[in-house]
Length: 72
Image (cartoon, rainbow, N blue to C red; front, top):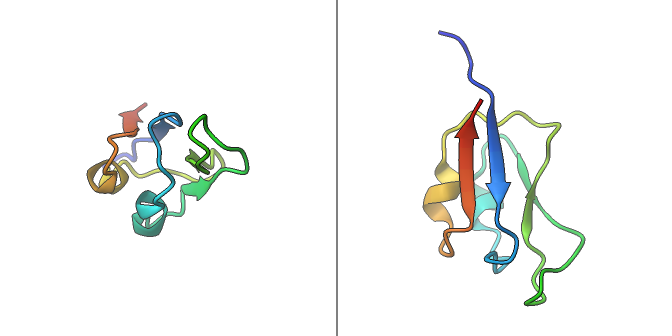
């Protein structure tokens, strides 16, 4: 079975910085940003060097519905 590379998109303005997505990502694809969004939160940001498997756990645990995962 071929691996599908996936891309994580975080809508930074919706993110409240709860870090649930970071805690639940088994591949460590997400990390807190150094910058702040308009609400003053350190939003989650994907690390493009790490490979997302597309499990979409981050999407499920995000209470703000700020994360989308796309298969490529």
